[in-house]
Image (tube, rainbow, N blue to C red; front, side):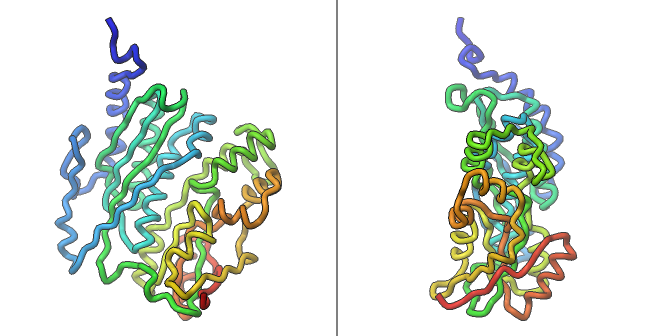
Length: 335
């Protein structure tokens, strides 16, 4: 007699995964969470938003991408759980929104309860750090769709902002200053090229120690995608932040123009960027041109703020006090 397990799907493994992750998930709950694990939908009260004159919900959805290939090679999973939450928190931040709740999607050819619990533990850690509730998700075991030992991770976040405080770039003008906030590495973009260069062409293994990195290749590539939410939302209470760009796929050259009004353009001082060793290594080993590097990778810049010239120094001092590495990246000019 055939069973679901015979086809490659283990329902018991899924149930075991839920048991292992429940404490992590519940650690993110607050008074607004109205459902527990196992509900068909996650319920979140927005009564607290009634204090706003015109509350606006901001949503985003993204995935970790082929960084998961590196996680599979090293069999280390918690950091990629953090990655997806932090990526999404930065995306809603670009409109000035504070995260409210997050839902995840994790799929694999075969669910390994310990791996799944590690991923969700990372998500929960990141959610706690930005005061966001992890209210639901989906786990899927799909043999034949995913390769053995690998996972896919995606997530959806909803945040909220007062309409009058939305950051849309509409007030950006000539002479405004771009302030860069440093990344910790590749974050979650450019891994297909990075893997091709470092593993296929240069012949590194994830456990190889590289002097220039002062770490192993795998550890460097699994550095967590940094969240800027708390520091930048606090800054926005002090000064007017006119625009925010999350530097993801497309790098500086494609992401910053998305928040700049027509008729204007960003002028970058590339010499100001303390390019991280990992990018120098990729460029050298892959013989990649400068233009291509800046189109694919963040090159050491995780987020860009646009502020008035008068607020630039104040911004730098405030961000530094919050533990962020920040500097003036350039200015806004006529396009």
